[in-house]
Image (cartoon, rainbow, N blue to C red; front, side, top):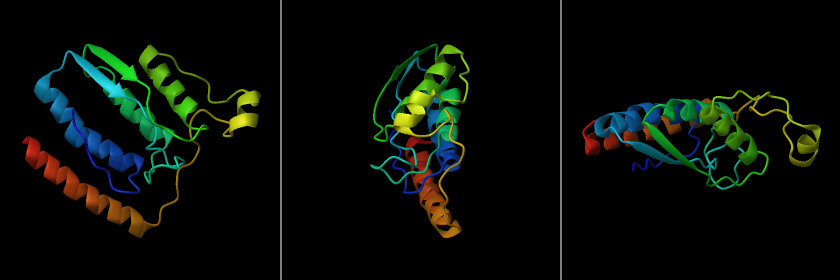
Length: 152
């Protein structure tokens, strides 16, 4: 189990960097027989709980990368507090795990009740360069500390 404290305004790109630089080397070191994941989406930029800035594009990229890391994969549902995001993200995850590609257009009844008309985010948050640079700097320090602590 690896817990990476992410700074506010972590974007898709920063999240994927942490995944590649910390999670992948740990998996390669231990060669697990099974990966257990908690597929919460409170990392999404619309989530009211956190100040993270992922989109469904980043979420999908991580899920795609997890596929094949171990012979078995147990995926659990979890956090996510924006009702327009959770079902879309979990649908995308299920599609990846089951080898299916779902159309982007959502049923009108869903759109009328919950919002976004597409399964995949069409845009992400707009961050000013200073905020993004600060998130990158903080994340670099944390990644460095974790790499040193785990010897990777």
